[in-house]
Image 1 (cartoon, one colour):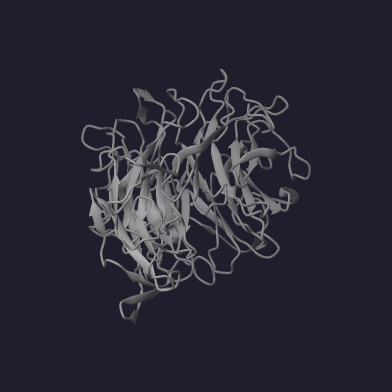
Image 2: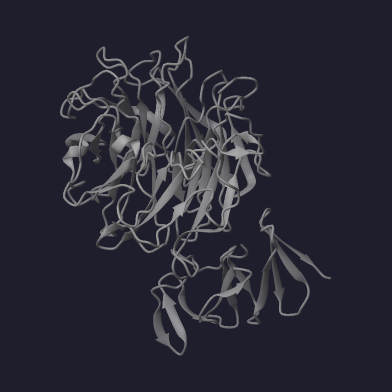
Length: 620
């Protein structure tokens, strides 16, 4: 029997490129997430290793990192209940690599504990991939992937838990030099106990401000001073060789000055978030305790905020908050305040703000609280409560929707303000029960998040998305944002762990791509038809608007340094180059796998194979 049954699954990033490396490039005559070129990934997608089986929960956990250092974020997808080599719920993780077009299956990989070099072997109910985090722990320029295995048995102790670290490289993740950690590892402050669920949650950040990323590891069922399932969090600091236990810290609610005390079934560390919340360039840690009781009010939920310093995480000035510490906040039974966490600079003031999920608020209709950051850290003044009954948020609050179950922040429109995706995985639409949806809220400079009639609601039934919703698929049980095509606008991956694929509930991931409002927003007119952007030097647009062919947009640009050359930006593939100022023709086949480039009426014709990311030509 596995003790950690109460674990929540939540998610806490063409052609020939020229020398101008854009910080913000291209877009479309729209803003925010778009259905254009959206993707639906599953274990049965062409080029994805492995095959799906009912109950795998592919998409239950998501993480983003640039594992091969190409500037495009890559996507890690957990399938923690997948059967591997006959071992039920051993678990696996697929990694899908980004490109300057979109995510693509080329070079995608499948990881599990029977892979040579990973440091363990598959066992029944390990749940490899139940948690994920990514960052550059050894400062080699490539993000590394941490994979939590909270169900791992160690020395006969069930559900003790371990984590694996796979290091990034120019060719992507590798098992070479992989690290393996548990509470019996040398230097760890504690030891393995049955049911601890070490690595039940994870978050990566720079807690001491050095060049090496650090890792917070939730041990959410840790017993503390005889209080079962009180919960704890380890901090492993990064080094040139990866994660190290040399400065290992362990936090729980009995630590002096942290606030509150450890209690039975608190599950301290169920959710974790690392980010810089006071603008000091050092990341801070937010710890969710969604089953914290408030007096006799059970499962009200709370959060701890521990600030980083040059010494690492420090209890000085830490915060311990219930929901009633904020504007319009109340404490109710089974609110689960702190069940999910994310952060972003929603008002563009230079300080990251915090968003807190409250999935059980209002008979589980759900809510979300935003808390602004400042030079002094998070501040209660200016906090705001969000739910589905707020004007222009869209839809309405209903019992068991669980608005705020999952959260992800990202600059989906490239305007400098972070935007927010709010998951409502138990939303029902019509006769479709618990299909789930996502609300997209946009940040505004000086004001923060605002609800607008132009904000999007997303589900598998949204026009422009392939496929249809099915009951109990739980669209948006997990969310993560990243820039998969390096266009300067964040994209959104949406986990659908009970999604039906080829007649089986194996799970899937929907990816929506963000689009900035204008490809050259903020240019300076320098006369004679020439313009200037900080990242593009001097250039002239050869056409002042987007050309469109079958909804595929492209724009032409000539650099002042070589006006006989031309660069093309396409919504499909990013920047392309041609040595002739004669306008090319760009076509896209209906299967979205080819781009046709024809220089005037000349041969040869060139075809961009978007699956292999290679140009091919024909002469007829």
